[in-house]
Amino acid sequence: MITVQGKDNKLILRPYEGENRLQPLPILIGFTHPEHGEAMSPYSEAPCINLHLINETTMPIIIGEKAKNCIVETKENKYTGNVIVK
Image (cartoon, rainbow, N blue to C red; front, side, top):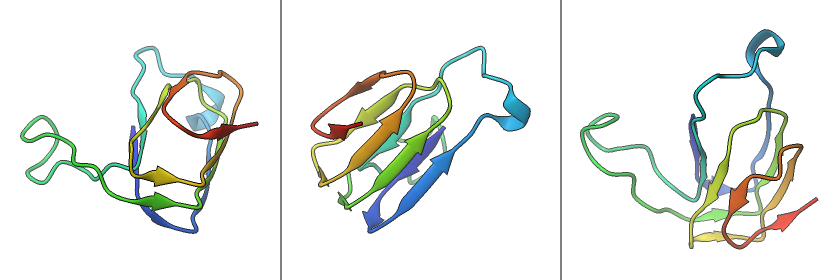
């Protein structure tokens, strides 16, 4: 669904027109987009520092090892990795 990297970002993800996706696509925190396009090369890890993510979707969250000091607020509680969850 999305890859997030960088420093001091605040993101709010909402479902399009209130509709939830039927097939889950992960939110990747601390990852880059594939270098040669989706399904052409793997995702790489990249630093993600001081992110504040508010996830109003039902999508799962995967948190890479390079993510630090991130706050994730989610209604679904589907996440993996080392992060503070509200």
